[in-house]
View 1 (tube, helix red, strand yellow):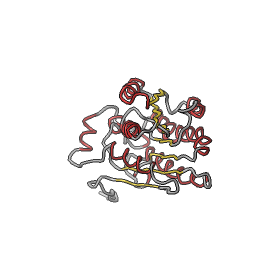
View 2 (tube, helix red, strand yellow):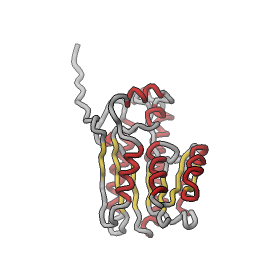
View 3 (cartoon, helix red, strand yellow):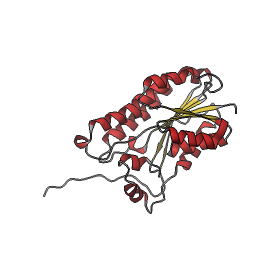
View 4 (cartoon, helix red, strand yellow):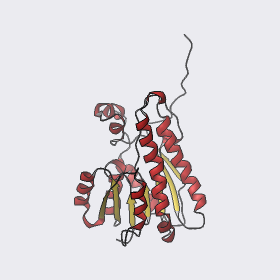
Length: 248
């Protein structure tokens, strides 16, 4: 093991799949998340290759401390900003403010805080940053204002961060998936698995493993190659049509 990745939101979905993929590829993996039981279960599976850190992305003090980890875990070569969530798809006036605040603090505030904390190490090691955005950053849909807005921030943050890091050798990539069947919709709907099953039924969505494999590919490209943005959709998904409101 001569490289180390830090993955936020490693307790499920793309984060967990990425932890397993990079550990299988011989990397040390630091996984963060709020659900300690899941982190411990993942540690049992991955053994000494995995360091579980239970923390909340809204705790900026804890995120700052990640820049102070001792070697070898502190020698971070890749930051995977995967943690994120979405409020329900209610219209904005009907969405509870506490849910909105949680999304913004997690998807934007936490991502910026952990990136800033790890930049000195990433610059020193000429590492890489992969940020998980979404096709929602580009294509609007009803009820997506807060989530899509946060992912548009992630996309633009990635592009501008590339400008800030020009000449350092640090690579920055925004990965923007479409429909991936994970726990995302279950969390978004407050635990409604039936709604999640209905969303993904009969359409062959992408899997967390598909995205983890894509992240692995980006991470293992030659160091002189940077993927700026990468948008993926399942073949069965396409772009939404325009909505037209007609008079009675």
